[in-house]
Length: 338
Image 1 (cartoon, one colour):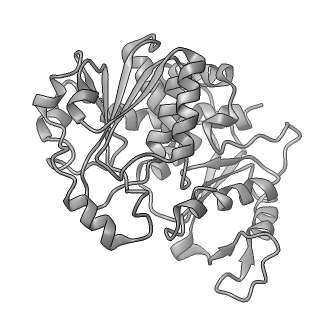
Image 2 (cartoon, rainbow, N blue to C red):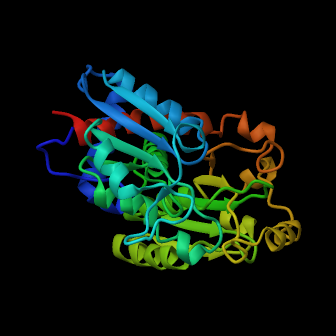
């Protein structure tokens, strides 16, 4: 169902001008207060999941439903087969179909494709290229929305920035501290990458604290420093959680895997065992300036963050999750609305 509108994709928040981000956040807040009409009646979005989801799937379905449209859910593990994405591949392996063909056909059925890819997990320098999601965008005739790739999570980043603005008002000059937390099922750094960059574009001061070996992607960090310089904020890497938390307005707790040991679970487990105490508790939260807590969830209680903080008045985690609904409605309205 190709549209006559100019084709736009949302692979990362770098695809949006700052004015577009501001407009989307304004629309998100309006939709939260006044849900709006069924503006996407007769529109449909195909949701393709190559790995699991709870909040993203549910909030996307609810958003499209509330706007009067429909979703078609496809899960790779149960609904279809492996797909090849490499250009010019001789397809003598496990994948019986190329993304090029799947994208062309699905573009005839739906008005947009929202995709969560599954990184191969063997080499970070390969997975960070996000070749699969970019292949979908290259071959699709309808908008492609990234529901999380190896490098970016734009929908989480947008909802998180909405939460910051809703809570702090003008975020310029405020301090956002990302603090690594320990978990046996560490997430990717996508949520941190995405929010860090849009926070810096908004003039915030960003701190990132982590044990050795858990540094963020080098290129993403170089971009962060450039954004800080351009927009009047700062980007500071620290090895001590207390230093990151002192004076912070928002503490963003998040476990992410070691890029230094990417693809080697034995070394990764050994590094995690040596990481030490990175639990967010009341004592550490008290170092901030009336600091609020954020976490993209799922969160391991009393391992990443203690119950009293998660369930207390400082916690924004449920609001973050709720705001996925409203910000995704804004994205869908922007991409598909008349």
